[in-house]
Image 1 (cartoon, protein in one colour):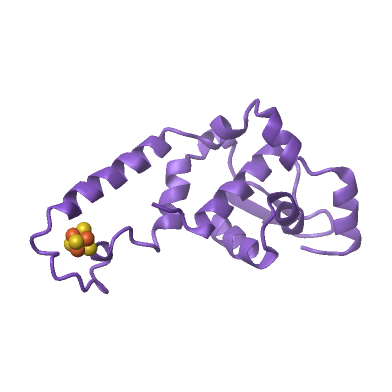
Image 2 (cartoon, protein in one colour):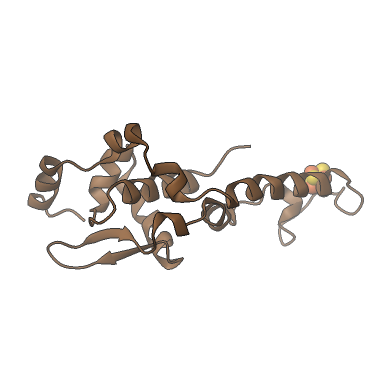
Length: 157
Ligand code: SF4
């Protein structure tokens, strides 16, 4: 099993926002801190905003911040949103499924249950569980003032 890049980036963006809670971050700052492509990150940020995980503020001091406290963001919900476009097995996408075994396959049911167990574990994990008191993560994702100034001067998003 492998998570999509979008899911992975969504988790990184949310962790960066949580570590810097109370600040608005520029997407470029997050991209740098998370070693991610700015273009990929912009798509992910749009989706995070559309689902109410983050909000964006316009203006000179604008940027991105969490729309809810970290303790109210379930990682299971985040994963379900971002993994919904990538069916785990071909038969999980009825419109495009071509597997000839679908009608009688027993594996399908077991895989569906295993997948639900996977999400259930993550349903019980909040963004706060990942970031609160995690000094190592804070050291990696806290946006330093020097980086902030450089991004502001370059007028990047
Ligand atoms: S073999 Fe079974 S689990 Fe795999 S795609 Fe076909 S129906 Fe689904």
